[in-house]
Amino acid sequence: GAGLPPQKQPRKMISYSERARLCSHPVTRKLLTLMEEKRTNLTVSVDLTTAAEIISMVDKVGPYVCMIKTHVDIIEDFSQDFISKLTDLAVKHNFIIFEDRKFADIGHTVMQQYSGGMYRIADWANITNAHSLPGSGVIQGLKQIGLPKGRGCLLIAEMSSSGNLCSGDYTKETVKIAEGNRDFVIGFVCQSAISDDPEFLHITPGVQLSSGQDQMGQNYVTPREVILNHKSDIIIVGRGIIKAEDPVIAAKAYMEAGYSAYMERMS
Amino acid sequence: GAGLPPQKQPRKMISYSERARLCSHPVTRKLLTLMEEKRTNLTVSVDLTTAAEIISMVDKVGPYVCMIKTHVDIIEDFSQDFISKLTDLAVKHNFIIFEDRKFADIGHTVMQQYSGGMYRIADWANITNAHSLPGSGVIQGLKQIGLPKGRGCLLIAEMSSSGNLCSGDYTKETVKIAEGNRDFVIGFVCQSAISDDPEFLHITPGVQLSSGQDQMGQNYVTPREVILNHKSDIIIVGRGIIKAEDPVIAAKAYMEAGYSAYMERMS
Image 1 (cartoon, chains in turn red, yellow):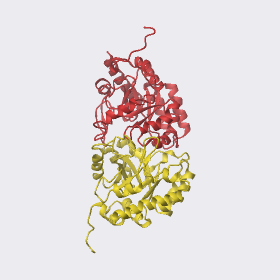
Image 2: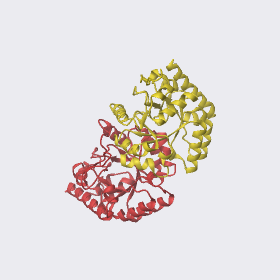
Image 3: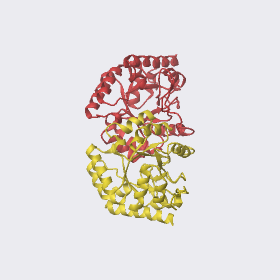
Image 4: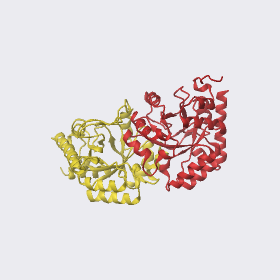
């Protein structure tokens, strides 16, 4: 009713749009809102190596995604022109830009890596991410740069590669660092939900329509498993879309698989 | 005597030059040999943000170091010309180049990050490093690129920042990954010696002439503590030298402190 503040409830009970209203971080609000508007929880990881290929792919899959994930440090011809085109496409297709930098150094160093160099990530990426491995200093450093620019950060709480060392208390400690930095940390890169707090997003990589493993230990799970069983919010798909014969058909299929799993979870 | 193969002994018993003869990796051999020739176990971390400043600093401190450590992704005007100048200085002053990239992604991604992008790290860095966090896939990926080029990799086994999560079995698991990849992994970034194998280098950051902590949880130890008590091989000094009023005087002081601690340990 009018005047009553929205109540926090367990995350699995509420829709993306309801959660948007519970969130104070502008990036989380915008992301959850557009997810329900566009009916997609799909992020495409556009791991191509020339600016032209990436821009062409993003323009194709843009209508079907909530986020585009980049690794700018694999682009052979990175330039400010590339960033202009990418941010124009983010407006045209209404998506969030997530630079998957996996910052993993001490605070003093990550400040410089996030703000400076050739890439100036903080100037254009709505979201970046960091390993919690170095301790809370990594977030203290990134926050000094990102907070004034209204950026958000995901903490990597679990990895999808075989034999990874994010075990034992690692995930718990990661949640603690997030809880201590809610003005900047907006959620987790993880394999399944690790916090009941509706303000934290759960974003899961290593997604393909059939499960399996690549040559270097990357494990794949399906969109339905990720959203319905593991209670994550967003699926990240890379090779399953960008290496598909028709990336648009593949993007639509992943979008449909991810969103129908979300609808099923809500029902 | 002539004809007898050199015997492996506990690392603390043997000199850098004796160890050089026990090592099969070309980068380790070269590094240990030049350390004894130049009488230095000092690595300077040249965290400046323009190519000109870095080249000028490297030319100044080059005579006193065994390695120069870079973060190329904080350089505003990175170019191939910068790399040419840096590699020329490495020949002029006889040092090894170590790009402190802290790779921390799945194998498929780090391959592209190491070989490609604007920085093409594998083309010029004798040594880079990686977190063991993603599991052995990160090394499988990097090795595919680095092995044909004769590069070496350090695994980050411990960090120097407060509240870091490299605890419990993390260090043990890191040593296992290294032991399984001796053709490419040449040692560890760590706080103290974690392996008795003379082929593995131990390299320790967070070193200043007086111990303490920075604003973002970075902890400092002295050269003598690192080399004599923690039995590490190489000290990494950043702000203690590059922010000193006279970096040459500071570099000489750290070189002397580090090497005399090594001589004391040998005696």
